[in-house]
Image 1 (cartoon, helix red, strand yellow):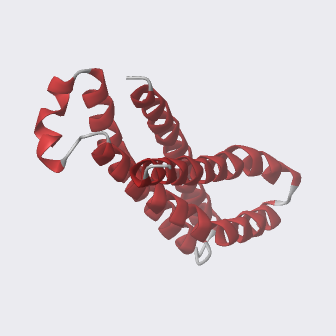
Image 2 (cartoon, rainbow, N blue to C red):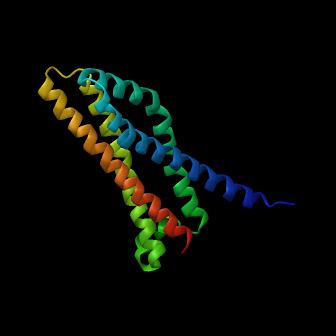
Amino acid sequence: MVDSALIWLVLVKWLHVVSASVWLGGLITTTIIFRGARSAFEPQAASEFMGMVGRVIATPMRVSLYIAMATGVINAMNRGFGFNDLLHLPQAGLPGWALLLKLALAPSVLLLAIYHTRVGRLLSRAPSPPHRQLLRRRMIVAGRLALLLTVVLTVLGSLLRFT
């Protein structure tokens, strides 16, 4: 008979890996692949294309980020880390530092996602080409930074797996 605790651990880990994969895959797709495809369009058509893509994938990506963050906390608790341990994580060695960094970086990624969405909404109402260009640059920087931090989070998660 399979232990229900084991089923819970596997389910939470699976949800974490799948949701983090959806988030990271979406970032790679929009930040690298679609940004490169923009050059095939005229500037206005490129903006419309990226806006449409953003509106279509925003909700699934955001939900996957929320699930990844929630299941990440549950995974840490399943490994024996509790909220009372937060101040003592650095003394836990490499796993403690990796977990502490993940706990610090994950909210940063969420804030970047929120910022990116808000700038995107402003972009659709930007009054002039220079203003649109500025907002586009801000979106690109936020997207690339979110991608970089997400890759770091993924590496830290892999490190936790082996420690």
